[in-house]
Image (cartoon, rainbow, N blue to C red):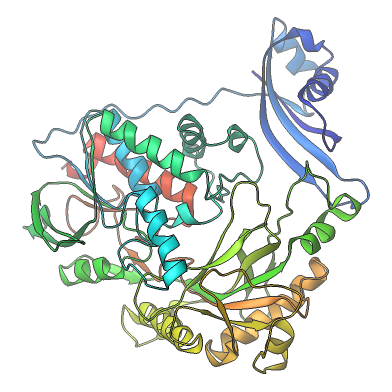
Length: 536
């Protein structure tokens, strides 16, 4: 196939116009295309008065592809091989079923690959299925009664199921294409294959998740909800089984296995502590804490798109900003949710955690994003392996108290945050968190080095995106679960210090979003298929 890059067209160009532009580049007629696929679509908004769409397309023609490549050598035209994922030949030979702990992106994609290879994985998910989980989240928002086992962090689909469903990633692994292809196969919007900033939306993710689960079951896999692994059985340095408990009834289960894929997510603190007690080797890693900031979505649209700010084709504008001072701690935005809401993503009693969520349409009044400050392990010098976890917990409990003790999120106007005074009432930006936002002083919750970093970051962001430092912008805190403060060590075969136990995904410290977690799940499943970790 031929890849044609950097096609530039006006906003709203249809597929026929894109085909004509591509045909013109390689001097053929659109009728000569045997196949035509969009490979990438992005918005070029550098010139606010002349916003353009940019496309990369893959085409095949009836004849003469080699000649086309030759006469366009060094330009926008190149040869491209169509990507086809080929899993390794299965060599695993065991009487035991592989067990997977956690049914978020890492666990789901690991389970899918193993099921398709005929290994009938047994999956334990501590939370509810995605529909019951949604009901539990709605009940939490309504009654402020938290289900600590079924919430925005725990349950089928993982934490990403209650977010924007954002699929952007910084990793370059070719398996990213396989993840996007499979998500589309199970019901995700087809544009995620070519959009520069793909997303599914929290309203569409449940369908995708359920379809994937059903395929795993059809292939012989088994998914058990409300079952949490509370211990492991190991002897002679190898996994022999797991102990699990029903989170509703308290009933205990033992399951024998020689393969445990640990994909529990970044909030399963109790599971990580249990593994540490059983001798699984871990280390501290860098993580981040900070706030969520809410602006009117229209303000972001105008800053990014100028006079095209209300163009429906462009949709809700996004941003990704960072500030790296020469002498000082850096700040950055994370998991920006256009047209979304801020949510309380708590998973432990008497704690508050903020996160963002958007539906597919991204048609809410506000935009929100995390503004985070990095925390390095040496900050906790001498504090022990779990010092970062304890730090997170302390912020979450302080926020719970500041919010009045009823899961309201503490919030503050940006102008008051800058002035260092408590907010009395909110202004033109209406806070969106369903459990409520209590006017507070976030400088009383977050450490000074974090608030100073955020302050410096916001000032720098305002120069890049005018209006970011809107005085009435609402800050809420704390955002503590962007990543895990721990990494479970693994070797070249993705195995931990206990043979047959494979740490995987965000909770193990090897991913940072839906796609990277899914890719990690695939990679771990490949090792299990090949039985690589058990070779001499």
